[in-house]
Length: 115
Length: 113
Image (tube, rainbow over all chains, first blue to last red; front, side, top):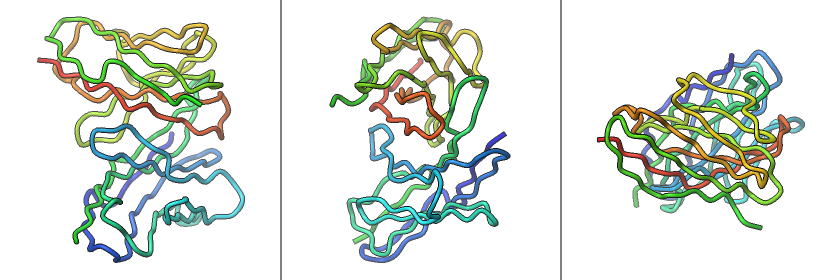
């Protein structure tokens, strides 16, 4: 069975500071990992994903995540955050149940950017 | 290209009632998944539909049921509503491959009183 642990429920940072949101996963099969972002009163938007190949994946808005198989981690980082990055961030691992491909999510990390 | 849409946006029901939520998948996608997101929690997988059949279910009771139509749109039905069913219900569409991204709709906020 797959599981995801997001180690911080809330992360407050100042604008233009770097940030790291931590994610550890457990999976006994091929690992596909995702970060989704949820802005207030909205659905989930894909931020980035790791399927195979390079362990460092990047998003178009400056976030990056590194797949570390030995530490079973997929931490999300950004070198300089903006007020607009304030949101809830969810790490997810792809899992299989019967014939379905499902996502198993962590509890989420609320990122708050202070001016 | 049209994204995933859901209706209604908000819904208030009382305990014991039944509710139907609707989802239109993104153009070209043949698979729809439903998730329940309780307040302050990550989404939990309810079930997935492919070619109008349920092909996987999470840990939810049978009073949660669904349908998928030939145009790949989908419905989630919940009978005998309980207070704990209050949540954001998210629909996601995708292709039925392990590496395909699931694209989420904006969700339906259900409140059970």
